[in-house]
Image (cartoon, rainbow, N blue to C red; front, side, top):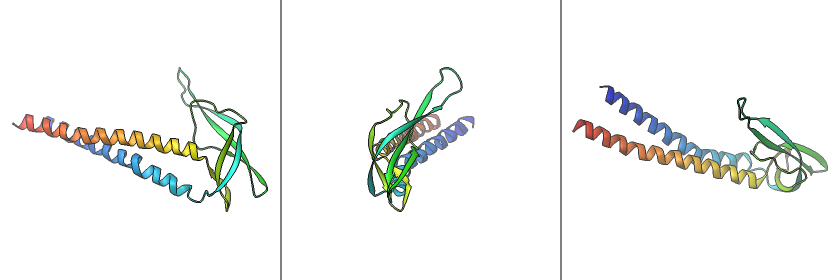
Length: 148
């Protein structure tokens, strides 16, 4: 009986891996595209500042770095902190091309960073999906071996 409970929990865990994998593989990148669909105006920008954020409290202490973009749209200067961080600090003064929503210039995205983030979500999602898909037949074989 405890074996069946263990297998049931294993199947549940495999299904969770499948669900999370599908969400990361498909839903998150599609959502990112929808959020930035109105960002149609290319605007030259530069990294004006870098915000350093502590990611761990225990040794070894790790940090993430978020660029602050500065750009001009419709005659107004904007300074926007990126929502995407990296483990390596970006170089202040680096020129980048942002895509800005002309109706709401506070809404912008950096296509290269967004593409990197979508790639990471797809790789992690694909990995979780693969684990879930491979776990189900293995659990089925274990159940057949125990039942037989």
